[in-house]
Image (cartoon, rainbow, N blue to C red; front, top):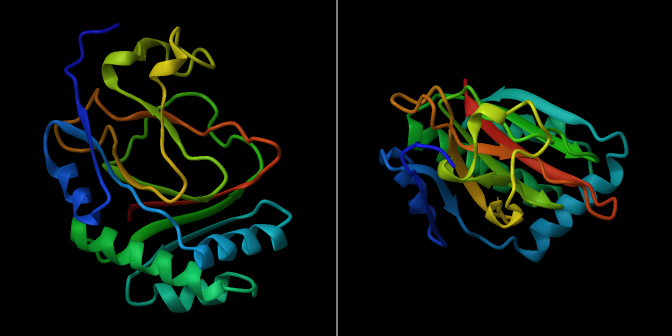
Length: 206
């Protein structure tokens, strides 16, 4: 479909796989994981009380993440499970990229937030879904980038669309990663199925 060099994914059930994002030929690194029952319940409880589909945005440090999240999130059963998991992911993200802080977004979503395939003009973004459906993405060689933003779906072959699972923690290289201009991961928000809201966490450099 195009002449772009193939850039691959790296995935494993071991979280150390995320360090593969530093490899030149890797554009997306995926830590495959299953959420515990308690964490799944916590996420659903949060969605159940957040009827307005709100978004929490914050610049947050590993050292104060737990305290700030406790203040920003409303009270609900099993709240600590969600806070502890997000705190651990923030700590991991900042350690991996030698950051003192990260830009956090925790979004309760009742419609596709970014329904068109697009790229992010950031160095690297962490994405994980706690509930609903996972983010969709495609390999460079499977898409015509000249169509991005012009049509809802620049695809003739739906089977080539890749999907993250709920619980997966993924690092997606963006256009601003050094040496990655023209290769940022093409992705989009999935459609909401049967009205089931998503709970999405993203982390960015800050």
